[in-house]
Length: 387
Image (cartoon, rainbow, N blue to C red; front, side, top):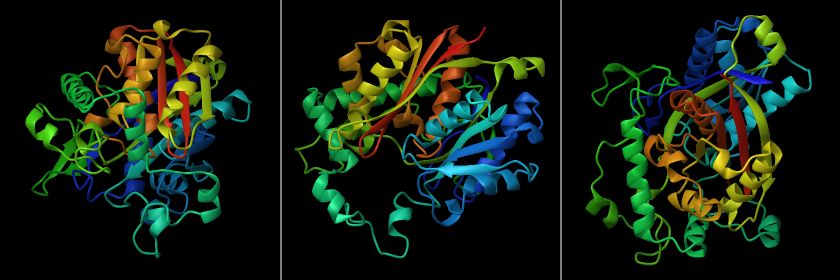
């Protein structure tokens, strides 16, 4: 099974360019953009697998199916929506590829959407039940068995375990913005998307809205810890991913059939994995996920030309780097979620689209995408670019 194309909307800031755009509209726009890039007829898509975390309100009732219908695709094209938290869209791509590998379908789409402005995080937990307070919506029996902690606390514990200082985290965050800003104009995976500017005037967004051209280091250093008391934590809003809105989609196909239909695949899958990990050090799952993916692909970290590791927090990337000691020039070369944002259910497909474009731009062959997931999980994918 191969990837024919992958696209994403530019990611917008919370209350930014997409504030007046529904999430199903964003996803429908992305699905149509995907097919326009390839020329594949919608009727040939045999399933659409969509990732979305907060499945409530405008993102409820199987938003994948709603987007397919809204896009004007034939009613015969089915869709399903899943939630593997931050790894949702990456898992959607995996499930699409697995359906192709099993011979169940010939063309499938793995995609995702999250509109964190219109459907705030935790809406699925709090709808009709007041405000979210810690883990008060979870089963007390679960909490008695597993000492779950907030993801920010987990990011703090990663920093402590791997000896990461506040200055290291902030420096990494600044570099993410620098790389993302320098990459403008190179990111052909971006699908120009209608929105509005700060004055409410119609615009077409062609870049990630959260990327900063310059970073005020003094202002970043003055930010207080996001969860812990002042002076007792290192994780801040400045060195964590931005709350964002966006959508992304990946077209997967049977290689023989796709080539017979005249398509030129961009990449093939070498490994697709998901792992469970420690539920307190929950964000460290990227380490065993990477190890397993490399083993299954028969590769070493030095063989990887482009790494996309989701910047949920700077401490996740730097802890992972402590373990694998990669060439950091190959890790998030065009910046990451600290700069461009993290629309939860869409990021997995969005990073795949960015990685494929990055490999094509640099002439690289192997790409690794890995994402930490709440409650102690991680997804990882290794692809080989086809020349």
